[in-house]
Image (cartoon, rainbow, N blue to C red; front, side):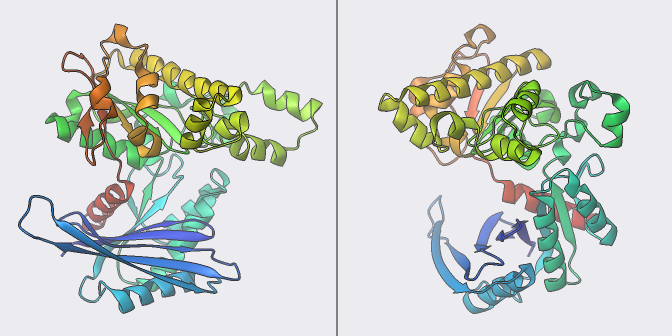
Length: 410
């Protein structure tokens, strides 16, 4: 069996999935959280796949929860291993052949999934300067996992790797080149595993080769990004040096005149840390409307809240701006896909984002757009020159695929 364990670690929590890659099914998943707090929490869900002879297999789930002190990631992995031993599936009967780790920032050093050794750990640590909120937590998880699963290849899958194909014109910022080079200031892009998975899934769904397609993928969740993909290669993406640039997000501002920061520093006496908190945690939809969840924003718009309406309009305005820009960069588009929480579940946002693109041959079918389905689906009309899709993302599966491939070729 080709079993892969996928780990997504943060500074005070980590999520995991155990996948059977022969069928690409999830056997178990879990969350260990509140690491370092007085009362840590862990949940472990076991999936049993029954084959009743129907086209869709039946999935039975059982969730087990635990509360206890979890002082660090090492203890967290001990809790996870005990959950597998007590509740299954048995790791002795389903031994992982690889462990895949999500790492947010790989800088310009890592352009593909990479088997982890001590040098790779050092590089991930050194790149923490570019992702201080993400890479340190990932590194804690990697070190704990390597101790818990010694002798098994561990693979780092970087959010930035898919965007290493960006041309210099797309990743270069127009600031002093020597200063930029010294401090590694350039566009890196993020959500790469999602954009890679969705663009490949869209091509597979349409029975086309990715090398033949020009695609735009909107990953719209609390964090949001859009990528232009030409022949399977990322050629432009909205996030930049950090995940702050680009679209309006739940709590992040997205694109902003840099002089706004200078103005606020001078006139409002905001420090660097104040500005960081403002742009990452107090801006975006939250800053404009007081709520960060798109469902709450839609409800406020429906209730006639003027601030919510402005936030909604700003959100859509930015989506349309990027859609138009990427149409120009690609010289036309074959497929536009929506994914992640908002992209998969908000027909109003999908329709609003594309309603001005009739000139480019984009036609949304209202009934298809409003319909619910669990898998990929077409929401454009049969006459639309551009195929518009909703494609549920699966970053864990993409990480598992890349980890399995990288470990096999080590």
